[in-house]
Length: 270
Image (cartoon, rainbow, N blue to C red):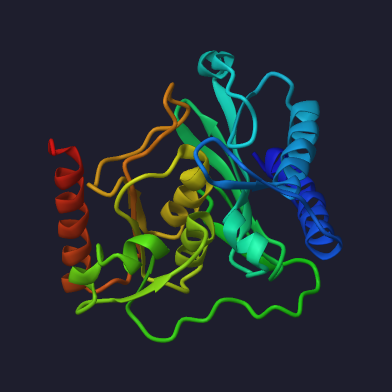
């Protein structure tokens, strides 16, 4: 898998430079049918990654947030799962909390992953069974992430704002972050202790990050604690819970209980 990671790393470095160029020189912003934003930078990064990876691995499938889904991927043993820019709202606002996130999935499991925040230059990567690598690419005047105190959970800004995470505040410091993929990478790198989103999300948001977390010795599941398999017909997910290996037991227990309760509430009829 070293060759796959090498090709992916080179493609992501090139795509990251393009994202930074567009952030500096200007980009267009559109609204998708689900009312979420997408920019010309998302589309440019998606196009570049697809061109590089499909040229190198023409037999692999493709699932991306910014590409019309092709069910042919379901018959492929290997599929690239891509979020060209996770945290588009942060990108639009000029905040360094966005990233490129790509995983190669084989038979439902991520086997190669990379997450790149071109604003900070942080590059996180992993091959299943070989641990994680963290490096700094591209000169950047943006500081890397710093945690104010521990234990620290990185959370969905909206869920924090409306009080859905109030029950955790006595046990963890909940810090909102605009990209779950970047949050998972930070957890894997030891800069946070947990990541939780109670509902929502898609495979492309977490495929790469979950492998990084697992390779760092942590655990990543749905919010209710169920394992995730990838390249399913419906890429939507019922939330995400990732826990670092050093999180104290009381905080770990509260996170698990909160995720299970949220899943039960979400599945209950109104």
